[in-house]
Image (cartoon, rainbow, N blue to C red; front, top):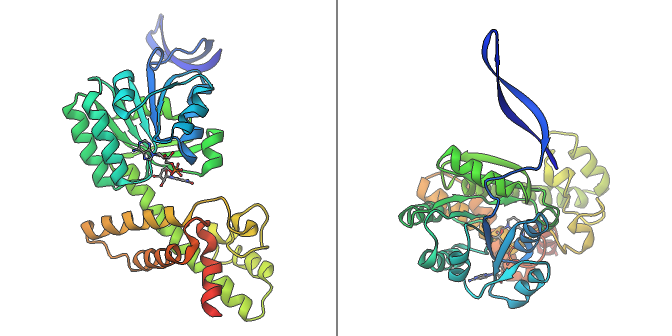
Length: 327
Ligand code: NAD
């Protein structure tokens, strides 16, 4: 049973009125009876698909790693052997894949057998230009496509509390996406047409990389000037240098508990993924002729970090990397 608001009409002496009336009913949904396909069951996709299964959807799954599929078929989903098989059996499809090349390749398989009228949602972080291209191909196949990249890491994916940034060409497409995404996320925002979800995502991550490197530099300098790191972080966190990298996710080990910097930079958001997102931002900036000198420099710093063995460490390891350059 669930509570929801439903517009009702009442005929009174004064005429016809519309009221919002709260009442209780077994919730009916446009998704009832529809099969959801899910492709890409890695760190993020695993938890997202699990939420769909737990919340009662009929789910068909595919990943190139068979064990990833097996782990969720044990919970009641059906396994498929290719993206084409998922597409042939699904009314909606969610993809959560690593990069542009893999997303393009998987959608080739989907478009080979997708049912006309299917609804496609790509939650991978990819180039907004690729999302627009996929939307055109989807329309040729009689389908709707939205991009819906996420903010929030593995824990939010498991808890069903992700933030989705949705690029949908119509309000109707957004409403349909929102209905499914609300089973996996807590905040779902319509950013504009297809590609705008990805645009917001790469702008955010470019800013995050710049602020993380800046925070790492400030912390490193302060420590070398003899400051206590906790005192420095505390003052920065209530002064004009305040940002998320300072007061919520400080990169200096020991300043905060329960952040990757205090756990040898394990968990969190990997340097390789941040480097990928910065590359997407640079590609987009080149096309848009937008000057992003700090974004470009951050991309190069994170790329050097990947080559220096930091690829799998959390991106706040920029602090550790800087410290090592000083030696
Ligand atoms: P991941 O590498 O853990 O998972 C990707 C999954 O895709 C893997 O299970 C892999 O086997 C599968 N895969 C690869 N090629 C495939 C193919 N051809 N067909 C089917 N499956 C295939 O990556 P992730 O951390 O889950 O991230 C997924 C996306 O979400 C990325 O675009 C990433 O940038 C974005 N993202 C990640 C995080 C995070 O914290 N990890 C946060 C926000 C956004």
